[in-house]
Length: 395
Ligand code: HEC
Ligand code: HEC
Image (cartoon, rainbow, N blue to C red; front, side, top):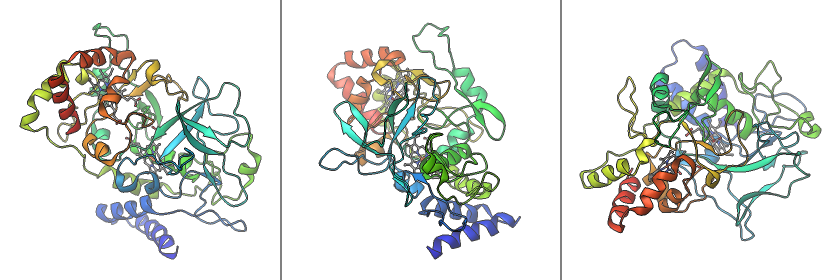
């Protein structure tokens, strides 16, 4: 504990010093990412202030080693790890009046956790809720993605993404990716690029969202110290906090250090090898690359993430229930495929809620704008299908 407090103090000092060097700042960012935060004491306000409701104590609990983690359950089917979260919203993306935006499975002493997640045959469902959800509230699960190469995704100029967008499908190819504009704290509305639904344009905004929703810690951009307490959760709203609306629990400097740490993490991808030349061609001919763009331009060279970062309607097959303002529940950001070999090796599931256990299952779940590519994939002969799968699995 003392060590952890030391990190926060060192970070605060460093942030003040104009000479703070980048490497040192990233080292502290990493320590903050791995740090287990603690609740505010009930008597005094302190600079922590985890909760009152939270999902995990540390960023790294859900993003261990920056990899996607497998979802684990107990023998009765209740989810035991933290990296799968359950989101609530109405059809327009508004949070639930009681549960807020996300089901928090943990709470500080004196406050009840909101419930748990259970894996049913139909997928993840809320379990043990303290009361009913609001009228019109839907839910849907999201798995914590791997966090590699995010600085590269942030470096792609916005106009390059807009060039790829074709919201009205004017070229008639059945694919109409659109840029999802979201409010960015440093610079107004920008194209969203982080999160399964592209809900943050800047990495720093995503870090602030995570502090607020997953840890119940406030930041300058998300100043409510009660995090994701619903407007009708009086016990949660009244619990002790580590800050108030004018004094965030986490300062902007600490947010920036975590951001800088994550931004510097190298992409996971490998260069496609020569044996994969046929697979590469099949990836294009089957139509995968129409969304999973092999490379995006950036001032620092091509970003080989296999995504266009745009939102696509993936049909009823991938209707995610809960959604975000301005984004349909069937719309998802094209998932980057770099690092897929690591994800497959880790045994964690594919797609936004980890439902697909194999690559084949993930492709077969593509509906909506992805339907044509799925059909072409299914029409491939066995050898070609295996070549394509081998290529994608090698990324
Ligand atoms: C309870 C588990 C959990 C915790 C704790 C958590 N995250 Fe996440 N993280 C997620 C999930 C789930 C998503 C996907 C969210 C979405 O798509 O809406 C995510 C997404 C992200 C992304 C976007 C990645 C991408 O590919 O677009 C970043 C960046 C991130 N988290 C950083 C953090 C940081 C920094 C912290 C700590 C302040 C943190 N996370 C804490 C579960 C967690
Ligand atoms: C219309 C655009 C589109 C096309 C075409 C498309 N995809 Fe996707 N793909 C997506 C989107 C969007 C997601 C995220 C969906 C979700 O998580 O629910 C996704 C997810 C995936 C995933 C899961 C990644 C992860 O991180 O879990 C894989 C694997 C994948 N696609 C492979 C393919 C392959 C192979 C093809 C060609 C046969 C293909 N896709 C064609 C848009 C597309």
